[in-house]
Image 1 (cartoon, one colour):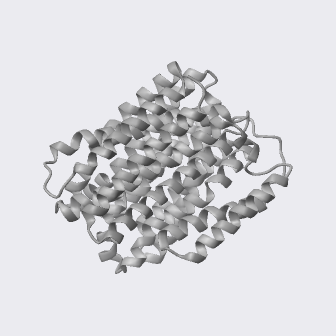
Image 2 (cartoon, one colour):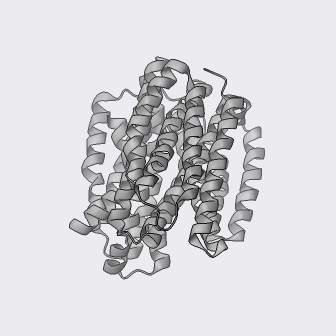
Image 3 (tube, helix red, strand yellow):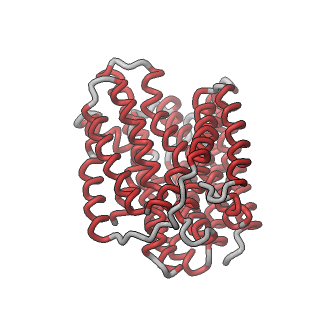
Amino acid sequence: MSLCLGFFMIPLDATVVATALPAIGRDLDASASGLQWVLDGYTLVFACLLLSAGSLGDRLGARRVYLCGLGLFVLASAICGLATSLWVLNAARLVQGLAAALVLPTSLALINASYHDRAARARAIGVWGGMGGIAAGLGPVLGGVLTGWIGWPVIFFLNVPVGVAAIVLTLRHVVAPRPQERVGLDFSGQVLSILAVGGLAFGLIEGALWAYAAAMVGGIVFVVVESRRRHPMLPLSLFRSREFTGSVLVGAAINTGFYGELFLLSLYFQHIRAFTPLLAGLALLPQPGIASLASALAGRHTARFGPRPVMLIGLLTGALGLFAMIFAGTATPYWLLILPLLAIGFGTAYTMPAATAATIEAAPAGMAGTASGALNSSRQVGSTLGVAIFGALVTGTGDFMTGYHLSVLLGGVVFAAGAVVAWRTVLRG
């Protein structure tokens, strides 16, 4: 429960502010560009530091790093809620992104250390993944409700009791796994990974060519440096495992399709169908609503059948849902959209625990945090890619519905390609 609570806050805070932005802008007299960084600052720092945080957890101890991340997240959330200027809010959001990067990979590493039986571990990962899926989908709804009824600061204050509860439960019930043999931290690898991932994320968010160039240079130098270090932050030998590489690619694929579609679907309901932010959030509920069931089933089925068949079923179901959304129009009855929405939500949530289990099982002992950091970095980059590419398709075509149809078609193709990757690389089951 403590690990699920900690993880729950991370995707929730990536989406909960979306429907609160207009109120934040009014209260803090913020420009549109300034408000964008309330969302993007968190995402950017989170994406940059996931690899570093996973490696840090393996070397210093996952429980210690997890608790530090929780404490920092609680503190930053309180500052967000108390902020009276935009620069204070954005600075605190950056700290939240840092804390989230510390929490996510170490929570998964602690699950891996707490369950030695493969079947029990798969079920636990299913519950953990379900909490994340519910949080991501619930964010826009919760943000709209709380902002309308109480005010936007409460969406941040909500993290304080949740985070404190997670800290207390962790101290009481979570056993600290033994860290890796003490070796020097790979500072050059950390800096280069931040340059590569951060440059790519910043380039996708802002469309800056220099950021893409920095990402390319950082990525190339990172590979060269890591291949020569005795104790690298991300051992490139991990990618010799087809199962590890394939699972990481599948993680990127499902986030590209799902978060790109979720971003456009929110705009579709509000700008094309003229739904209020709260009603739009409620219209999205089929996706997070099915996530808990899908993740729980995925945990059980992965334990019984192995990750590959579960990943294939999830990816193909999600692909069918995305392809079905091609037929959504400006006046399509909502009830006709429910089944595709359920398919997309089910497929995404059903795939992720199996891909996570495959990634962790393919990693050597003592490297669960590093493996989790690699998987979640790929997922975060996939989310940023999906939002950027799908958004570009909408703006580039000049017609929202044309761009939307092209986007969900592309999302379905990405899911289907992920199924091919899973079939070819994930050999168990």
